[in-house]
Length: 332
Image (cartoon, rainbow, N blue to C red):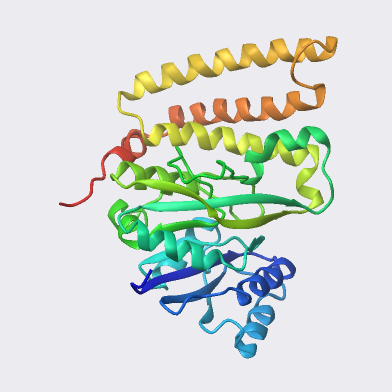
């Protein structure tokens, strides 16, 4: 890998100074090849904690040579990510969450994969959950709720990628027009809404770019004990249900009426199935434990909410949303 590769790490953060300190400490330990040009940008999304002091400490230590911070006053992860993209210039950029601890060779491996796949639109690596305290056994079934990502030990092309440690080609994101218009919300303050990273990946794929998974890029995603509480899982799965319905709308190729009818039908079938499982759980004859029923129901309720939002949406908004990821193509 002799070609110069430029990659920017974008860390969007909101009142998470303690973990951000650990994240930057791991980044300071990166083993960077000579042909990799890299920077680190912290996007301060209206933090009121010690975030500025943490970043200043690492800037003054010079342990991360190209570290800087920018303020994004508009609250929300989409705004923070857009700010990060607009304030960096590398051919590639990576979203490193403020609770993700990178392996020492993460940047080197990302640069190596980018050099070998210059026409790739986005790629991600292995995201291993790092529990603050051992969670209840049933929680382990819902790794997707915590952005777990493990497609094995071989490079492959998945259907989607999680936002934690997502590496994106700047050329690809510009082709999607995502910077100018986003359709799905993502984390706003402490609200458990999601879908922004799903939209980004779907729009990159629909623009004709390949997405990849490479196990060589490994990171630990720290999960505090409060996020393993039962109500948290119910709430996050509710948001994921909305996100899935809206994500399906982005890539829909047919009419609005057909989308609504098929969504209602599939969600109704899922509702009947969870009702059956609830009964079996009471009788201890099903594959779901009773404690899991509200979690799965939360996801289904999220899908019903997504359907209702589509129905209530004005015609102009619907026309922009439905099939929007199908409308973008690579310029020849």
